[in-house]
Length: 282
Image (tube, rainbow, N blue to C red; front, side):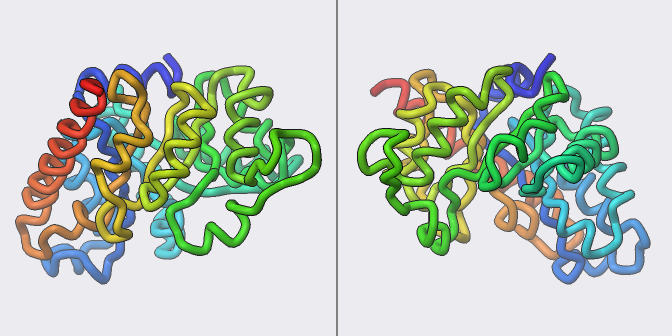
């Protein structure tokens, strides 16, 4: 099985577009976990177990673990997901971007050390910064394309006039076109496109056909579920991994934090499901 095929199966099995982001901040944990040396692992595994039935994927953000010297807890968390919830892909949110042997080591980190199913990457050093990840058959690489932050417009919306692509092609469109074309010979690529820019999200979908799109930015960043799904879903109402992190993780700071996370995850899944149904009906 491959990342893309596992993801398609997860979309169908869970009837969900929800990607649960795992961004553990110990300062926001319930007090009863604060004394534990493995608080990050305990918090995240409880979140995972409570929300797995509503999710098509999980996305741990590596910086939240590394800043706390909790890399071993990240390894254990991904192993837990694979063991307890097989078939739900794990995306390591690392946003790596380097070339040569350095990229080879980053690929080993993502796929051999952490056993992630996919990893987020910055494509702005070109194809040779992506190629080492594609040497792992069946694993995915999800490239930053049109990100959800306001500062993404500083570069990603610039127009290009080098004669290679269509007239007035913008940088994010070039990334999308390359990812859907010659960079994707093995069918392993996806793109990150923010919910905060539905017009650009629709343009990326137009360029890449049914390629998976990781869509952050709903909730705290202001992205709208209906607009995002209308713009980014494929004709069958799939094709997206709509990420939600803080709203789910920190739905409660009490001992009921996992149950509260499950409630918010179910509500988000249902909202996404309804938007996808409207998309299918045209």
